[in-house]
Image (cartoon, rainbow, N blue to C red; front, side, top):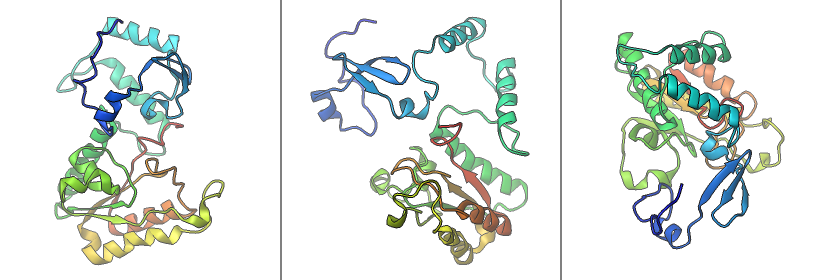
Length: 258
C-alpha cells in the first residue's frame, strides 16, 4: 500500500506523547515471525507479540490463508438472536482448554471490553441470586485492567486514572506482591502469600457480603512481570469462597501461553 506524505496528524495515539512521536516517528511497515521492519529498513524484535495479540508471530501464511477463506465464506454475522457455526465451534475449542467446569465462552473485542463485561456479569449474577447489594469490588495496586471506565477504576496505576476523578465508586485496592527480596527469584517467590489477607481485611471492613468480585492478574504484566508468591492465589480463592465473592482472573496479557 502506498501512503501519502504527512499523514500522521489525524491519528490520535493512545499512551503516546503524540507531538514528540510525530516529530520523530517510529513506524513499522512489515512483520515476519518475531520481527518487525521499521520504515528505515531496520529489524526490530517484537518481544511483546504486537500488544500480546500476535502470539503465533507475524506474516504466517497458513493463518492468512485461513482468514481469507473464512472471509469469503462468511465475514461476520451478529450474535443477537442469530449465530454462525464457526463461533460455536470456537467456543467449544476454547472450553476444551479451560479447566474443570469453566465451559461457557462470551466473546468480546478487546481486553478492556472483557473486563467491563466481567464487571457486569458479576453484578448480574449476584442480582439473579437475590444479592444485588454486592456492589463493592476489590482489585490490586499496580494492576492494569484496561481503559474503559470499569477497568480504569480497577487499575492500580495512578497515572492511568489520576485525571479521571473517582471514575467508578466502590473499588478498593489490595497491596501488590512485588518485593525487593524476590527480584532475582526463579518462578514463584517463597514469601508473600500473606499479602492475600488484604482481601480478608476488606471483607471485615466492608462486609464480605457486600463484595461482588475480586479482580486479579495471575501474573501482572504492565509494571513488570510480577509472579505471585506461592500460595497467594490459593489464599485468595479460599477467602472468596468463604464470603461468596467471585474471583476473576484477568489473563488478557498472560493467558494462552503468552
